[in-house]
Length: 398
Image (cartoon, rainbow, N blue to C red; front, side):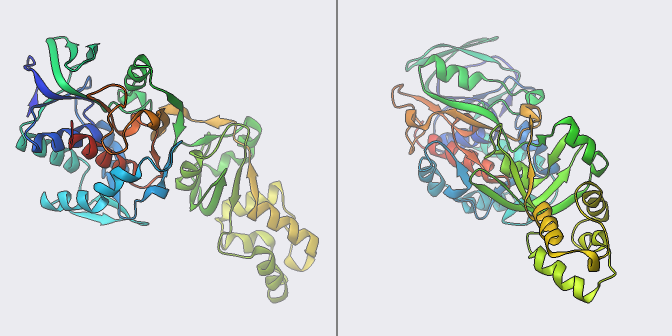
């Protein structure tokens, strides 16, 4: 039930944060007969759910697996992910009659609206007697158990306290450091946090060179650190975005480059030599534009490449073209930050938590789930799957 009135209690479980992880945890606990309250300081539940996937919510990925997640402890997520799989959530979606489709690479979206996922979660909360309160900021006055919270309407006591407040991403939607700050107050270790799945920005000089390409997109393999992703990049007024860049941003660190292959399916050097024989009068930009867009091909030739008939290109010039197109090295000067980041990387160190239950090892009855934990998924529904899985894991025992 969705409530705005005074709280009642005591509760068996209080979940702070009415997002994907928090609501899933509440549902799992409610199904066990626990008396559950979900509180959120925002005016509505599931704000990130509502805006995700362009309003259609990429609610999971059929191929979600431990290798799709980053963490200081890469094994931590395995337990929760194995016990609540994408197919478990898909079954729930189908039970509620929500139509969905696979966009690509296992990414599942609602046919109609992300509102359907929020409605599903609220319907499950109502069916299990979970109370959901919006406009309800709380402070944690005392840790127990029992744990004591204070709200504008009075004191709330509970046996189990679940922190599902997310990270710093998209502060205009109400994101705060509540969960990280509380974890620090308990003395828990925190992995450094930074914006991830986020566009990168480029220095002014580089932006000036690429300014009129804003809005252009091209298929690439984009790499940073140990991450390499086959997806589109998108030129923007501030730098680079698109799925490949968002993915790579989780692996990128300041002072490092992005390496971009603009011809991922082509041995470009061999192709140009072949075309030189077959089409000697064709201009270089014409041949490049057959894979790139015309705008991108022309700009590359204006900036860095010898734009002349292929017959006039020597082998060393072809090698130069290949280097500029197959190993384009980009040096970002930063990212767009939490303002546009889809997730927060880092968070509560997994060494402080049980991988089976998400409970704090040194603080009985306190759980951390979802984005606040140092587990970050790749783009494409994996972070929602972590929310469902970690929420379900805590809800089985809280």
